[in-house]
Length: 225
Image 1 (cartoon, rainbow, N blue to C red):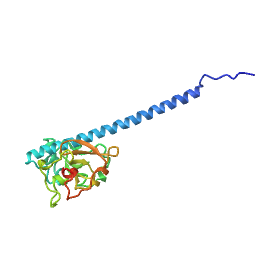
Image 2 (cartoon, one colour; image 1 turned 45 degrees about the horizontal axis):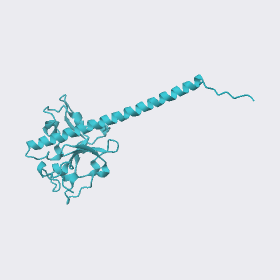
Image 3 (cartoon, helix red, strand yellow; image 1 turned 120 degrees about the vertical axis):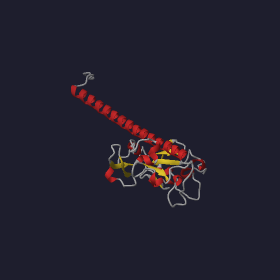
Image 4 (spheres, rainbow, N blue to C red; image 1 turned 60 degrees about the vertical axis):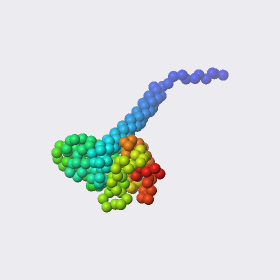
């Protein structure tokens, strides 16, 4: 009976197939790694933007008897960003920081945005007028909303729990009038939030509490609930 011999060598075709498969796997791994890195970089840039806004709001309060920016409707000014919030980010007017107002993960085209909501007309760094995209909203419950008894201007000193009180967040519009639906998840199912104490973290929309005007909610007004 003849002994069967075991072939120990690859054919050229088999080698080509193996090398091609390994190359494809390496390409896929690199693509995924690159995508993850890009996502992380965008998330970091977004958090940096929100941190600047929180710091600017604190500086604003120091210059205005402890009050946070009021009315919240005008935290970005229609003429130039420097008139309200951006004046505490940069002394330049018109602003040279228009990119700060946009989250890198916000992919909505300018022509699909709502004027006065997530875009507004402003003077640009070149002195010309143009639309500026806005990716963040401010908590009107603590900054105040005109003619609303439940959303009145707050001083920093009356916010008992600043580390739990949202000030700015990833949002569908530049104002958040106690509406959890304004918060938008742009970063792996989470939204970035800047709290009154300057801390920046992420949160799911489901974790944003429904506003109840009869309660001193930590998230909305910095209470101790």
